Image 1 (cartoon, helix red, strand yellow):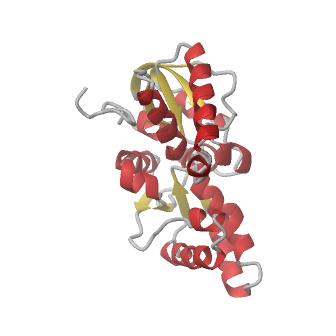
Image 2: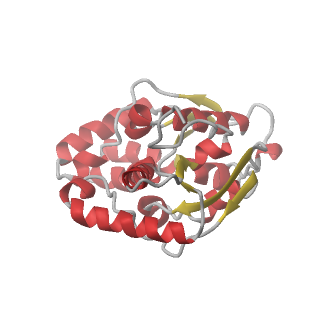
Length: 264
């Protein structure tokens, strides 16, 4: 069993590589900065390897296996030598943990490296709760929020209670669960592009259920889902705010929410 942060010997805190993810890098960098703050507050030394690229999931899911393997090789190289790889996305980390070893199963050299990387790769909420066992630095966020469970984080990595446990320490925040919190929001990467009508129906159902809770804020751990939900909320003219859970936990949710104009 891993020690909690306060029980670690000085000088033994982990050296973590932040896997930023494409969506965070291009669309919501504040999630990356929040992840760095949470990790550093927990005593980690954080690097953001410059050689990192996409996890390769879009290529892999589209059948471009050779392209996905070349991308995976870059990721494995970029994060070599670090104690852990941590990302604010269950979807991307699930790709590294579950699919990379499968992709290289016929290549002994790369398979060994992929398995090693998979074993030390964690989604952010899971890393803070399951590996470091930390209690986040006290912050305040006055809101009634409902939490959306992303498919990859929930079903592939078993992330369910970890974000809720961390968020329970946020002053002023009340969590109000919606009835279908484990149901897909309809994003699904390229799914929302290939099947827009089905995707729109799914996210509309999600919004109808979250509104029943009376929540004024939606939280989650995967930016793809949150962008999808926020986009639909804005198109419907709703004022419900959307944040990544890392932004709230880091005390960095005092800016415009996802999909909002910075000038409120």
